[in-house]
Amino acid sequence: MIRKFAKYWRDSASLLVLARDRTTVHQEKYNYKVLVFKRTAKTAFMPNSVVFPGGGFDKQDASLGWESFFRDRKVPTSSLKALTEVDGSRPYIFQRESKDLLDRNISLRLCALREAFEELGVLLVKYEQNQNQEPHYSKCLQSFDVESWQQKIHDGKASFEELHTALGTVPDVFNLYEWSCWLTPAMFRTRRFETAFYLAVLDEIPNIHPERHEVQEFYWDTPASLLQAHHEEKIWLAPPQTYELTRLSYVYDIDQLARFAAKRNLKGSTLLCPVQYNAADGVVFVLPGDDLYPSSYDYISDNPDLDKYGELSKEVMRKQAKRLHRAEHKDLHHQAYFQNIILDDHLHIQGRNDFC
Image (cartoon, rainbow, N blue to C red; front, side, top):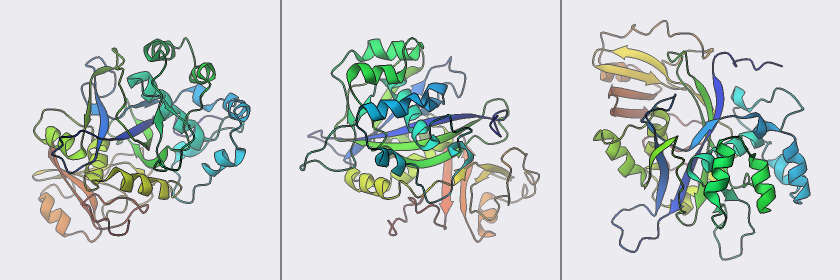
């Protein structure tokens, strides 16, 4: 069966990796940092942008061989099944095209884990937590020849399953929490991606091994510092990264974030596909729930009302709306977010998180 939107975009997965920051002299109010990297200039999609690790879905991620793999390692079938029992919005990316393929709620997690290892050498593995450890945390395995395996998998000379078989480890799909789902706007016709975003939390900052063809440099930094660097035009964050870092920026404690992510893990994700409107003083991108978001949007068509409010300022457009979920752009490095609705029981883009 050919996937419904296969000719319009590719499927992919990304991973927000948060790690506890244990530095003794630390002036920040955050007790964690986020891992991002800058793409190289030769990257086909969004070169030089700063992004979370992630990449395109591969057929190995959906192989039913993983079912045998998990069985051989005594992983309870019930634990895997629990990851598939999501009660909430399910974008098309989560629908598998055949029963001969692994459930998408598992295979997309494997994709995110594989890409994080290929790009940055971060291998998250399942381990037995003791009573003194915080629940909901994953572990990064570092005691093996990371760079040799990383190159083999990146070059297609070995599979992600073969890596875990050789190491006797299990990829930690269980402490990977569904976070959001983004689709590149329809205006980018030649390269679009529907991307499932997952979040993982670590108790310490691991060593990073950047893949030289894809990674120009990497950063561990707080959400606020990364956003500040973006606003000062020192880096450029792609729009989903800006949005996700903005809502993370209001939560300073990694334990609180871990508990929150685990709690909403199975609540689903509304597909976030921005729709553009031109304004007299910039551009407005609306998101689901906003008054201006097209009803029954097909995710393919151009917005016929692109210039309908072109003579109005962004502020006037905002004041005319009752329901807000939008980003107002002055330019590539300066945007403001507005939201007065709750979507998917998720973090609020302006920090109004009392409901959490």
